[in-house]
Length: 206
Ligand code: PRP
Ligand code: URA
Image (cartoon, rainbow, N blue to C red):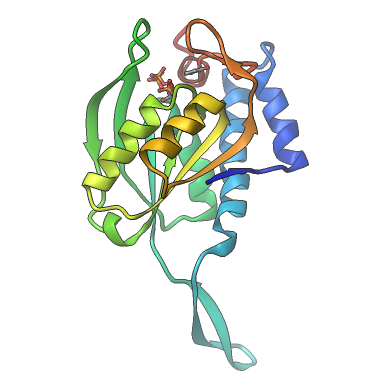
């Protein structure tokens, strides 16, 4: 279940991020902003419950979000999307999954997981800018499912067909949201045109 969010503002910001001339500060800021803009689209069908409130003019019926949201960034690069989403949904709880990709085999290696106690009844948004082979996303979804999560959405900035296929095969119930479906993976498993190494660009580690 792939959804590519087609929005001019997202396209503009993603183009800034792709540019090799964009430094760490602007890369981070645009990632943050795109995370928020994507969340606005992703939560379009979010359940609401009617509530009665008192306004200065009297009683009226209003609406409240009727489900908790849990954000699960895949460490490290997913951390770069958390703040932007929290600006929109400040009550969201945050879990973490630590995974790194072996540079040779491209296999994901797990090193950490911690989730909030309400994960089973929440809408879980797993966030990571990059969906390349899909190994990390599949492993992260495995972990949140083991913790009881049922309503899971995977939110990435850029992805390729290999990653989409891997997630759809392992977890056909998970909705995948991308800001762009990119052309291909290169011979060392990087997305083309992609963003380069997202973790390094966010944290300035190269
Ligand atoms: C990157 C990225 C994803 C993963 C995608 O993380 O942030 O988690 O690779 O690749 P895949 O779809 O082939 O699994 P990386 O392993 O480089 O770790 P980092 O975020 O700590 O730099
Ligand atoms: N991880 C990244 O950071 N970039 C890619 O292009 C692929 C995986």
